[in-house]
Image (cartoon, rainbow, N blue to C red; front, top):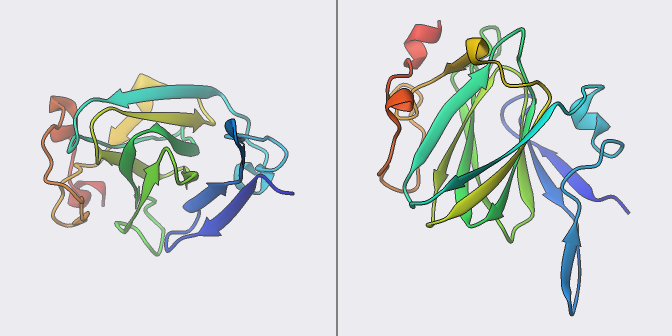
Length: 181
């Protein structure tokens, strides 16, 4: 029995991954990562880094972040506590879906993860207070390779479920889509 079901989205390479949960009277077990079973997603890449974030207040936006070569990375994002709206924006210049976004709700209970390929920016909005996310990365963090997109760019028009209440100064200074062209 597979531990994962992987569905394609409207953006090439962005996938929603459902984790199989095995439960009994004591609770449950779900696999967050399996190198063998996730090779269709990883396609030979190795996992270089795993991070956890905590967001304290509902409405808070984080993103839109990505790394560019030589540190471009595939990310797998899972919610361990709380509920978030997780978003990918295609910033690959030659992509047919450049500037398009895809979002889905990740919760500690729904067993979903979002897979973001290289060239797609990632952002998240906490839907409740006190959310924890787990990030699996195929490249180490490299400050010089950090890039991003303003999360409230009107040209992208992400439909954030809540009114944004918190945005870091760094994220507020990120460029708009027209600056990526």
